Image (cartoon, rainbow, N blue to C red):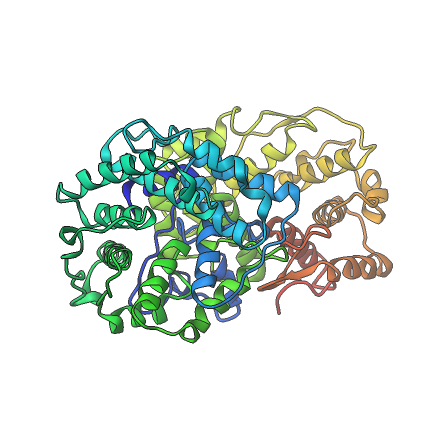
Length: 551
């Protein structure tokens, strides 16, 4: 991948996956061992991007335009005929996201979507817009990338020519324009370019129908000796170099020669863990050097599992883990009686805390500190513990509007063994679902903080009884579970009829693909950690009469 493509990729994604070319198992299969009762699918929620746990609903979101591009190109390489049938709204969203990242590479990413049937993402007007980015000196410039070097201009020119070739407009360009571009490329080729630049030059010259000089193709294939002993980053760089070598030779009409055995082993060991761009590079290397389309069944199977109904794909490498999701995983472990000490998670949290992206506001810092302590870290530092006394982090006066923020901060402090001040509570009427949910949140939060005796006199079981019995059709599974749990904490009683009704409601929302024991908040297909926590806590309070807690 050229420097310009790396710049475009950084603009498109906020995080890049760190797991590359491990010699044996995938990233997500590594980590500390937990009790045998914890289901293995919890480890599938570990983010490849940062090692924290991510919210399962991310699995229901399609990947970026760049991810779509690579996935569809891989399927094409392996002999599949991918079809995409997105509606107008989705097509517009994909197009918008792509062009925000780069006017040129963004359009290049849309080419496979167009070829797979999503014609609305790229049209005749795009070729005209691309041509507007041509300079009078032969190269193209992408304003979004801000690259004024020859390397940046080469990347922009490569993307522009690919788009024009795909839309059938390259052949129609004036001969003088193409000649100017070819002359400029020739001058760059005479300057002893690096391998990635040589590959880009060769591809551009090929697209223009020009001869690729021998000075570019005379390089040997990168040395893959002692491949499995090399550091991760070195193996990843070697994959990229080999792809560039293959692209260069192909563009010149020559046969590339690589160590196929090494790359076949790399594919077999990493097929489920590589980012889509790395997987594409690896598949292309093997296809260009003799592998049949039938040799990629595991690749095809992985991508087909990630495809959505409209043919677009999810992108696991973009699932960003968060302290919030990780804390809910820890709470689920605690409720279920599984070990919560997690060396792998602790290392990921410490890395996050020491990074430039570490949170700065009080609530987020407290969240991260509580997670670190939960996973087996040291007690909160003096500065961290002070957050539990700070009214800007743990509100001193609770209202219906801030009770959720108060409860979460109070919970973090309680789980970390740090007391909080007794809050005052501004009374509100429990006359609709939102205010009933707020009241339930207050009751549960006071329980978590060990301050049940501070429950205001106006908040009684009788106040929540009607909402516990029937919160109405707008109530989510989380709402139902939390309100009933608060009702029980206030001294209410769940009779057999209520238990049967709750069990039926929860059973209808149990499980989602790959996560059979978690719960969905509503009729959407994605599971939710917070909802699962509320359901499991209620089942524990009811002596497991609901049958939701793992046995």
